[in-house]
Length: 331
Image (cartoon, rainbow, N blue to C red; front, side, top):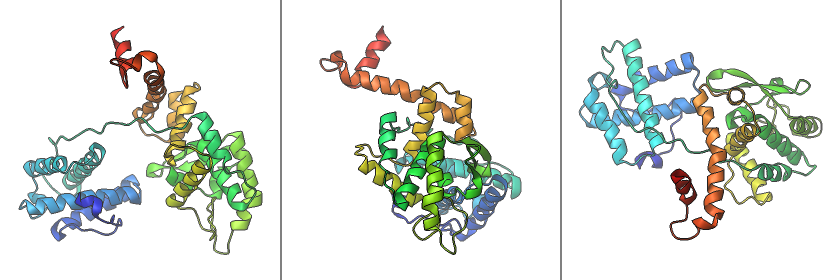
C-alpha cells in the first residue's frame, strides 16, 4: 500500500493538492483549539485527508466544494480494494466525516457529503495482557542498584500500578506526582485531567529513584520531567518501548510484550479482582464506558483458550480451537 511506504508527515506538512490544503489546515486548527487533540492524532487525520484529496482530484473534483456523496463513496470503496485494516479504514472515514461537518459549520458548505456514508466497523480485539506472574517477572527484572535500574524499576512499577498511557508516562512531571498522598495528576486525551492512585510498591520504588537515581541524571538544562534519559531530558515513547522490551527479555518472557500490555494488565487484573468497571474507566481516562468494557472479555476468553487447549475431548475428532466453546453452546 502506498501509504504504508510513505514517511509519516509532520502535523504541519501537507501533501494535499493546493486547492484542498487550505480547508484541511483550517479543520486541523479547529481540532487543536477546540478539542485539544494531540499532534499525533492531527497528523494521522492530515495523512488520511491528504490521501482523500489526491483521490478526489484524480476523480475530477477540483476542490472540496466539488466533492459529493458519489465521490466519497468511491473513495471508501477504494479503501476496501487497497485492503486496509478495518480500524485504519474506519479512522480515515471518521476524518472525512469530521472535515465535512467542519465545512458545513465553518466554511459555508450547504450540505454534508458524508451524511449517508457507510464503512467498515473495526472489530475490537481483546487486549494483549500479562498474567500476574508475568508482570512480577517483568518488574523484578529491573533489580540492579545502578541509576538506570532504579529508574526502570520505578517506571515499570508505576506503569503497572497506574495504568497510564505511554504518552502520559513519557510526559509525566515532578509536579504531577504526590507520593505522600499516593496519587498522580494525569493530563490525558483532550487535555482532560484525572487523578490516579499509586500503589505502595510503586511509591517505594519512586521514592528510591527520586533520592538515589534521578539526581544523577539531572543536567543543567533539565526541566521538570520525572523520568530522565542519560542526557537529562525526558524519555521518548520509543525509549519507553525499548525499556519494556529489554526487561521482558531479561525476564525470559516469550510473549511480544509491548508497553500498552502493562496498561491492559492493570485494567484486567483490577477487574478480575472485583474492581468496579466505572472506577477502572475513570482511572484509565476512557471517555466512554464501552471502551472499558472490552476488558470484561479477557478472563472468559482466557478460560475458553485453556479449555480448548487442555480438555481431552478437544484433542481428537472434532476438537481443536473452538471445540470447547461449541460443546458448551449445545448443552
